[in-house]
Image (cartoon, rainbow, N blue to C red; front, side, top):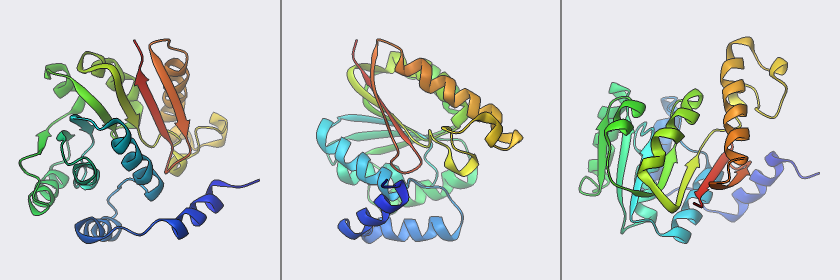
Length: 215
């Protein structure tokens, strides 16, 4: 059987490493223990952007701005709204967005994603969710007025490998991680059985869950 680890190693021989400013950001993230999307997730995201060609993108979980800038590069015609709640990362993200020359296309909103979503208006073609994992179900409910038929909501880290894989029994994960484990499993089951969505679960990165609005 081909394991995800072997597959990822093979893919590394096919795809180049990040270049330019993204490479600098990646180095900073690894040196400062800042979570950014993994290479496999980046490849999927770039492919998705090239496929659906979104005009408006929403991101939950800016961190230092790595994925927002990646999306800005991969979708040069798109405008991006990104949300972050952690003060120190907000400062760095603003610096990075400015350094990348994307301050006119990327708008960073400061605050709790759930609260900000309740106040937002308009419609987005792509939503990239990379925020608090236990809140994914809440985020989806709040996102529904902000998307349209054909919009894609892409959720990262749904397999939660770093804290015990979602595919394992709840008793196989640390007690402190069981609440997230249970909520994520419920989220995945509820969404995959909802007729409003066409979904796909991928092992890319730390688990990518793609939700296309079909109704």
